[in-house]
Picture (cartoon, rainbow, N blue to C red):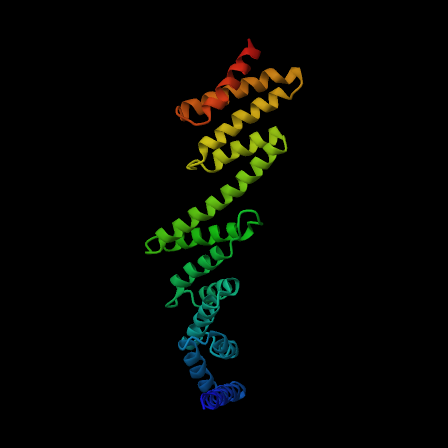
Length: 264
C-alpha cells in the first residue's frame, strides 16, 4: 500500500514538473515578451536562477535602455552570483555599470564586480592575475564611492589580497634561499620589506637577509668575503635594533661574531 502511494506521488510529481517545463518552453518560444519577462522574474524570485537566465538572455537586448532592461541586467548578474559563477557575475555587474551608470544598483554592482573578482583570486602558489585585478577593482570602488558603508569591507578585502601576494613573494624568496641562490634571496627578502612595510613578518625577513649574507660570504671566493661579511654584520645589527628580543638573535649572534673575526 505504501509502495503504491509512493509510486502515485512520484508519477504526480513527474507530471507537474514535466507540465511546468513544457509551459516554460512554450512561453520561451512564444512571441509574448511580456509573458517571458514576468515568467523570468517569477523564476528568479523563486530562486530558480538557471531557468530564469534562459528568459533574461532573450530579453536583455529587447529591453535594453529601459527600466526593465536595467532590472534584467542586474538580475542576470545576481543569478550568476547566486550560482557561484563569479567570473560571469563580475562580467555582468560590470556591464550593468556601463549600460546604467546612474542606475539604482550602480554602486552595489561596482562593489559586487570587485568582490566576485576577489572570490576568483587563487591560492598563493598559482598565478595571481585575478588578485591584481581584484585589487584594482576594489581600489576603483573606494575611489568612486569614498563615503560608502562598504569601504571598510573593501579595504579589508584588499588587505587579504596583499597578504596573499606577500605569502607568494615570501615563498619565492625562501625558495631562492633553499636553492642557495643567496643574491636572489637577499634581493627578494629586501623587496618584501619594501613592498610590505606593515608586515607582521618583518622580523623573519630580516633574519633571512642576515643568514643569507653569512652563507653567501662563507661560500664566496676570498676576494668577495669581506664585503659580504660586512653586510651580514650590518643586517644582524638591523635585526638587533628593531627586534632586541628577537628569537633569531641566539642563532645569528655567533655568526655575527665569526664575521667580525674575519673582518679584523
